Amino acid sequence: MLRERVLPVATVVFAILAIWCVFVVVMNRQFVEDQARRAGQEITFGEIVSQAYTLERPVLPSPHQVAAELWSTTVKKKITSKRSLVYHAWITLSSTLLGFAIGSGFGIILAIAIVHNRTMERSMMPWIIASQTIPIIAIAPMLIVVLNAIGITGLLPKALISTYLSFFPVAVGMVSGLRSPDQLQLDLMRTYNANDRQILWKLRLPSAMPYLFTSLKIAIAISLVGAIIAELPTGAVAGLGARLLSGSYYGQTVQIWSALFMAAILASVLVAIVGLAQTAVLKRMGARP
Image (cartoon, rainbow, N blue to C red; front, top):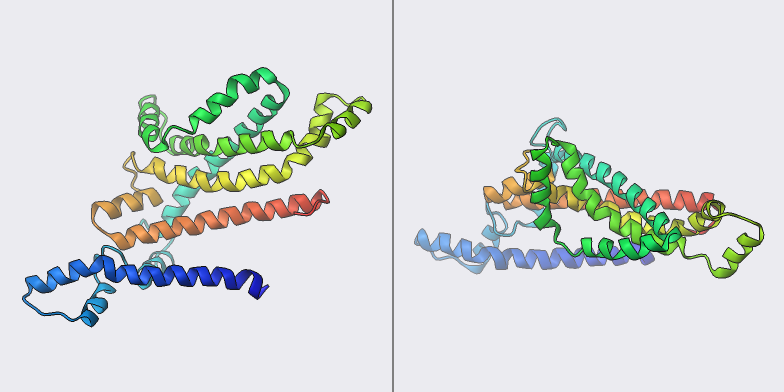
């Protein structure tokens, strides 16, 4: 267990931290040297390294600065405070979950329709694929503005951006899953005089479960990205996107990086929850996860 799972992950984390620490000096060195030059001081390499790790507004913050900011804004702040990252994470999470629920449901229904209707497949699949070629950062502002113009504000516009991103992996994954039973299995169901609905419930859907949960893991993570992107063009004052935006406005790179880490932690937790649901469902079905 330790050698197979923990050690490889710990090695990668250690390598990332080592590279990060090197680049802290590389990225902040120029700023430190400029400060010393303006003050008319000679500065050694050791002093450059020392100051690069403690700059108030670094180009690249050090790991301990990001960790301190995360600790300060999660543990030391009340979760109802607008300075709390937990508060902002909840704002983003609420629109993420709503968009994920709508997108997943839409993707599943669309996949069932495509599998049972060849006309739907020929007419919809090209549009589904084409929809994902449009950069979300380009259409998000337009969608938000249009929805605001017709009086739809609040959670739903942000959730719709998450919906737009999350329905695609679910639809594509479910189409593959619903078509995974081979012809012999389908012929066997026909010999039992099973109709399309019975084949769907008793054969296609159980076969599609591994595909569905794999797609849901992608969809939940990309829903979070959609919610964060949706907060950027609206000038939102709450949410992880708002923290990223305010951090960029005021040059607070530590705030930006802490919001990024919170988003990564949130995405990891959401994917883990879907993974646990996958294990429970497949175990219930008697299949090996």
